[in-house]
Length: 128
Image 1 (tube, helix red, strand yellow):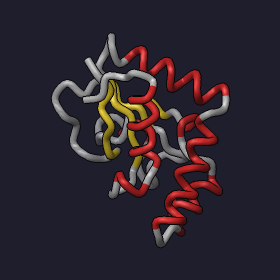
Image 2 (cartoon, one colour):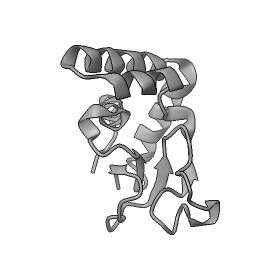
Image 3 (cartoon, rainbow, N blue to C red):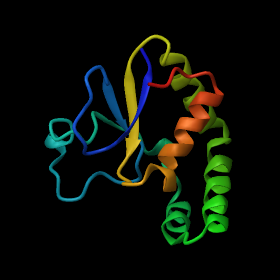
């Protein structure tokens, strides 16, 4: 049992469990009834997605300094009470069930997916 950090839209791994989409918007051009069967996500949970301005900041980051600013901003968003409680819940659930969280970004190192991995690990989550 563990939480898997995944790229949405990629084939599921064995034992990955429920896939949670932590993205601002559903995949474009994909009918809602195909989200799960096409390996996007089973549940859409934008509460852990970066705010729109933070996404723009990440996309515009061209150097380490700009990427660090994005990371600080996203971490600040996740420190707010509601997201922080969600992260605590997911960390606790990772000891009882297998599930995955993810986003669309190709490069995990340049998106919030890597930060979700860190934030969950800091809370004691079991990471696959």
